[in-house]
Length: 179
Image 1 (spheres, helix red, strand yellow):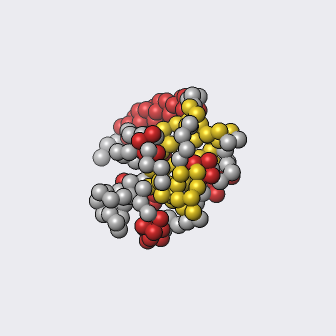
Image 2 (cartoon, helix red, strand yellow):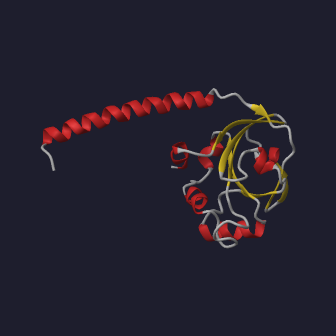
Image 3 (cartoon, one colour):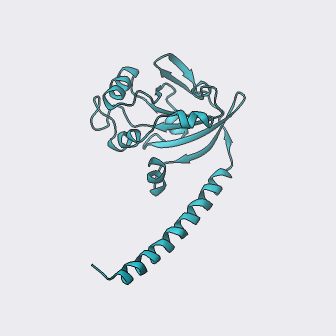
């Protein structure tokens, strides 16, 4: 317990630090928007409740796609009844997708697990509003850096051309995006 003056001094110091971090986050966000992009050359297939879909079809007609590689497969603790604890926590924080859709963005999750497992886990966890696809092209995870860990890959569609624009996997920024 401190005096009012000491508390105000501590608050002023913390407020200064928060302003500096806020400015750095703003600059980082601007740099993220200026990231170069790379054309996706390969063909990648997925399976959803409605059958097979290509990477292009996962956009659902929108120009941007955020794909979260969720670790739910043989070898993950809890399989076949549960997925990665961290991935599950991330999915718990995914809100209704209408706000993203209104901004021309599709969000979906992908895993190598069969659709029956994905659907059962999604229903149990209350994630039925999140599209969740089975990865059908084995090299997808390796090609996009998510073969040994989760990850967010961001894609842009221009007609039938798809570009990878951003990737996030490790570090404190995952916590920022996740919240």
